[in-house]
Length: 312
Image (tube, rainbow, N blue to C red; front, side):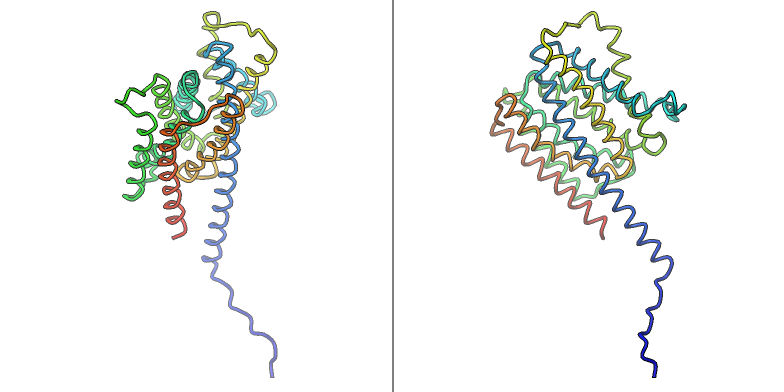
């Protein structure tokens, strides 16, 4: 009598390989999400520092310092002196376009922060996942279904609650913030495209050097010498927060689709609201809170639909 336990038949090789591929993809997406959240913490610190600096020096000086610091950080990561060719891109036109979009987003954002609370600019920026999801179809081939399209439209209604066009509340800062939002949405799209051909160090360098190239020749027109050491520290901090944050963002997009990462922008509201209150004593208004709630709900629904589709 044979008392040994019968051995289970091995799984088909195809099934095993598919399960391994699914596990690898899930792991990569998880790492991408963590990197995205860390990048957003850096961006919250960047906006807070930029808003504080705007009280002491011109906005263009802040933008220039942010890019100088980011360039130095990018060179440290790339180390082109030892690793030759790390700054060579396979798609120079796309890299340059992406860098210009980031420059526009940065400039518009700092201009908006002169007029708005951190929570106001963040509420408008919450539309980023909606815009990214809408643009991901024609640009990346990641199309949204009819339910997610409705969620995008509802989210834009939430943005309208915040900006309230036609009710006397539209400020120049809000126009700057909306312009920065669309620049940043297209920047995200091109970041995803570049992740397939260029390493993160190369893409990060092109992002950083653009502002230096554009603003350095104009430096004598807007330079104002800081009158206290803390302002110097703040100018240096903008370069670190911006450069390192975008480096993490590039790494995140190399590991997960844009539609998966986009909803996690909402983690930034915790840091922006807290820093706005601690540093400036700002408390979000009723319309800002209401509009942000609508946009957040729409974005979370988009994330729910994405997860449901991924696990179907």
